[in-house]
Amino acid sequence: MTKPKRAYRTERLQIMLDEEELKAIEEWRYEMRLPSRSAAIRELLRIGLDTQEKAEPADLQAKSTDFTVLPEAEK
Image (cartoon, rainbow, N blue to C red; front, top):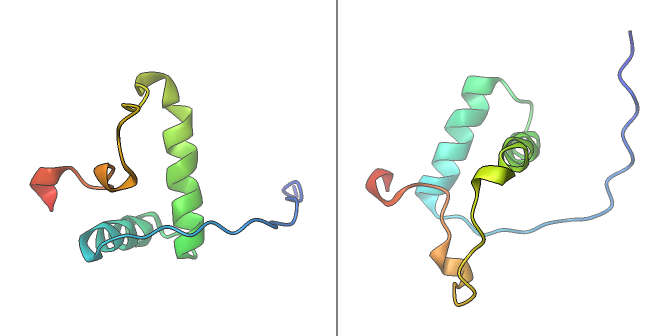
């Protein structure tokens, strides 16, 4: 059985992470045996979007730097 063909990706997304955030993503990627960092981030986005009903809208005054990958206790 073959997988359905994906549309060619044409959009690039750039994000900035600190060392600990990147380390957490890389460790998760390794544990999940994903082939690339991009694949890992896509999978994490898919998981997050699947659980979006549990999320609350952000404060309108929040800045980009207010959002982090890791809970403060893990940093």
